[in-house]
Each structure stands twice: as C-alpha cells, then as structure tokens.
Amino acid sequence: MEDLFYKNKEQITKIVDSFGVKILPNKQSDSVFYSKYRKFKYDLELEKIHFDYAPQDVDEFIDEFGDFFENVMNFDAPGVMYNVHPNPNIYSQVASFFSSLANPNFCMDLPSGKLLLIEKAVVNYLNELAGWDVEKASGTFTFGGKGTLLYALKIGLDKANPDSQKRGITSKNFIISNDLGHPSHIEICNWLGIGEENCIRLKTHNAVISVTDIENAFVSIIEQGGRLPLIILNGMTTNNHSFDNVKAVKIIRDKLVKKYKLDYTPHIHVDSVLGWVYLLLSRYDFEKNPLEISDKTAVILQTKIKAASQVKYADSFASDFHKTGYCSYTSSVFLIKDKKQLFSIEGKYSESKNMVFSEYAPYDYTLESSRSPHGPISAYTTLKTLGAEGFTKILANHTDAYLYLKDSFSHQNNVVVCNLEEESNLLFLAFKPKKYLNLEITEETSQTIADEIKEFNTGFYSFILEKSKKGKLDIFFSCSRSYKYRGKSYGCIKIYTFNSHLDESTAKIICVRINQLFNEYTNHKKEIEAHNFFDYAEIKGLENV
Ligand SMILES: Cc1ncc(COP(=O)(O)O)c(C=O)c1O
Image 1 (cartoon, rainbow, N blue to C red):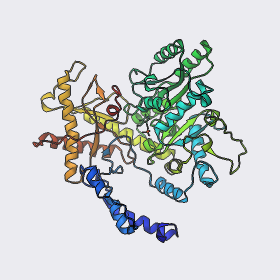
Image 2: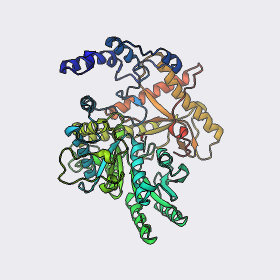
Image 3: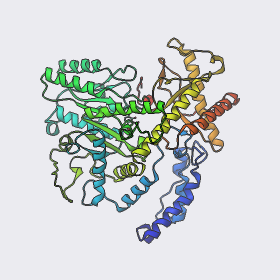
C-alpha cells in the first residue's frame, strides 16, 4: 500500500513509465484506434470486472487498465478527422497532472496556493485580446461549453429578473438563439427553468443571423409582456464557421431598451467556444508576414480575425480549450465584460484591487464548489508553450490544408463538396454512386435519390469501421445525417479535425487515402454491417443544424 501514495520523484517517474509501457505502444501516428475496432457488448464486458476485497497487484492492474484503451480513438493521428477534437499539448497534460497531484480545490486560494492565480492570468489575457478593460472584466473556468452557456443564461436571468435569486422566476422569459446554434442553447432553457419551448431559434441566412429578425423577435417578446434575458450569437458553430454581427445586434438591443423604457438590458453572449482562437491570431503581423503565410490563406485568416474581434461588443463570450485550444477535456472558460454581473450570482462576492493571498474565493459565485485545476492549468500551459505564434502557424497550415482538400475534391466527379463556398476548416462530402455520377444535386432532387445517396455515404462510413475490425487503419471521419445540402440529407462524410500536424502535405496524403478507401468500398462485394453513428443534432431532435 505504501507505494500507492507519494514518496518521492523516482516513484512518480517509475509509475508513469509502467503505464506508458503498457499503453503507449498502441498509440501510433498511423492508427485510428489504440486497438482493432471491436463491437463489444457492455453486459459481457461488465461481467468481467470485479472489485475484490484484497488490493490488486499494481502490475496486473496496469495490464488490465491498459486493455480499456480498446476502441479508444487516437486523436494524435492526423488521419483521425472525427470532429473538432485536438491532440492535446503534452506539456498541458503533464502540468495538469502535477497540479492535480498537489490536489488543490480551485474553489479558493488557500488550498490551491499560487496555482489559482493562473486562472486569473488566463482570464485577463483572453479579456485583453477581446479588447475589454481587464480591470472591469472577469471570467471563470467551468465544465464545458454547455457550462459557459449556463453562466450566460444565469447572468441574463439575474439582470432581467433582479429579485429572482431570492423569489425565483415569476415572469415569462425567452431567449433568442438560431437554427445553427448548438443544441445546448435549447437545453439550458430546460436546466434553468424557463422551458425549451421558450428558446427562439431564428433562421439564419447564409449562416448568419439577421439583425432585423432579432429586432422583430425582441419586439414581439416585449409586446407579449415577456422578458428577454439572453441573446446568443454565433462565433463559429459546430458545422459552419461563420460569425454573427455582434455590433449591429448590440445597437438594435440598446435602441429597443431605450424605446420601450425597459428596466433591464438583455445580455448578449457570443457562443465562440470554437471561434475564440482567432483572437490569438490578431497578434500576428500580416504586414511583415514572418511565417510566410500565403496571400489566399492570409486573407481568410484576416477575415476571421476581424469577425472574432466583434466579441468586444458582447457582454460575454466563451473559449473551449478542449476544442480549438489543444487541451484535453474539459477546459472551458466563460468571459464577462462586467465582473460585477458574475460576482453577484450568489449575491455577495467582491474583490478589492489590493487583494492578498487568502482572500480569493471564486466558489462564492461559481456553479461548482469543488473545482478542478485541469482547465486553467492546461489552458495556461498551452497558451504559453504554443504562443500566439504557434496557434497562427497551426491555423495557417489548417487553412492551407482545407483549401487543398476542398479544391481537390471539387475536381472529382464522384463527390460534391457541399460547403465549398464557405470559408471553413471542415468539409462535408456527398459521394455519388456510379449511376449518379452525372447527377447535379439540386433542391429538386427527389427524396428517393437523396435517400439512396445517403445510404451510399453512411455505407462508406460503415465500411471504414468494418475495415478497422480487421487491422490498423489510418483514416477515420464522421458522417452526418442531420447536415442538409440543398434542403436534404445526403449522409455527408464530415472531414473535420483540429490536429496540430495537419498541413497541406498531410492533406494530400489524406485525400489520396480517402479516394483509395472509397474505391475499395465501391469494389467491396460483401454485405457491410450498418454501423451506428452518433449524430448529435439528430439525437437532440434538431432539424436544421
Ligand atoms: C458552438 C458550440 N457551442 C457549445 C457546445 C457545447 O460544448 P460542450 O460539448 O463542451 O459542452 C458545442 C459543442 O460542440 C459547440 O460546438
């Protein structure tokens, strides 16, 4: 038992090494999974797990534990294109491990020491990048993108219903979101008691929200005697990389508050859990261009940087480091322009400028009273070790890579790049069966044909999984039933990764490999088992995401 608790540095190195010896040989840069893919049965596997009265031998434990890496996806492999899911910065993981080893509770500084200061430093840096007054602004790490949205709604509700902290919400409240917004925009209305039906999902036009639609929705709420605690805008969505015009929405909001003499101001939150990363790129000198970014990519990056800079007009925004920040799950941060609105959630917290150690206690306003150091520490480490330069390099490489992939697939007659026109670092591909090679997919394409093409694409996804049952595979992607092209679902293959190694030369290999696998699929004679795939929007019952 002695060895289970801290003794010395050598013990740590030895234990980490023992885990590494078992687990890491299966983490290979050309392998999608840590193992062959196997469709195991939960009940049978659970039957094998026993918790004995006696302690387990640690070597045997590590051996057994390593086996749980079966089917674990290897996000360090550039061929894994399964959502915006980065390969974590190793220094961030190790810094997080050592912080956790000290076992601080980030609820307050006393059990956390100076480590908790790191959260403040990251929050200040992001607020500065947003163009806010760092003295007046604040923020908090929380459990995920959905957590950041819960904060936004909670603060919005407090502002629109000032006595609700004590008496509960007695008025009729709505929020404004949009049809591209993440399902969690709706779910937070359930969690915070205003009801999912009161989440207004405005239709976007060319992937952005219309300011007039927001104005009309707000006026309609006022005329019904309702309240609007929160307007959520997009700072890149899950499937579209567009930003809403925050400044224009703020102007309309302020105009209506004045016109109708409202006793509150709706809170504007930008759901920028993906798009925040472009704030870092604003530090790049495009004039001197030391990274020799190509003109085409530079223009795209500058457009995104300009769009992201709009967060300065919002009341709050959010960054997920587990999405676009090279940290592991979960590392989300909610940022707010006016710290008083965050500090007053539980009604009482304040901070003096001369605060000294032992006075800092975020648990006075945070949702969690037990807070892990993981988010702040890993975000800090990644920001420091990659620097704005590292992020710029990676995003420039990604942009080159996606431009290459889009261009390359758009010249093939067996596939439609559904989001060709969008400046986005992801691809939706609708592969066409041989008999439809000359078909141009339009709004008028029949449902029967659409369903046939959908089956063909979902079949390609299943084929990939079938293949990885037999051995190592280097390419993986997801498939979307909910993504619509010209009004219909084609079960598009979704090529999306945030892997730090992705660049144009990797993209060339990926393109060749996808085509090779596609040819194998079309020549495959045997029946392919239909594999289930996770489609978040479909599971959440959303039609138009
Ligand atoms: C735009 C957007 N907002 C919010 C979320 C929710 O974030 P999380 O899954 O970390 O709770 C996601 C998740 O993909 C997202 O893409």
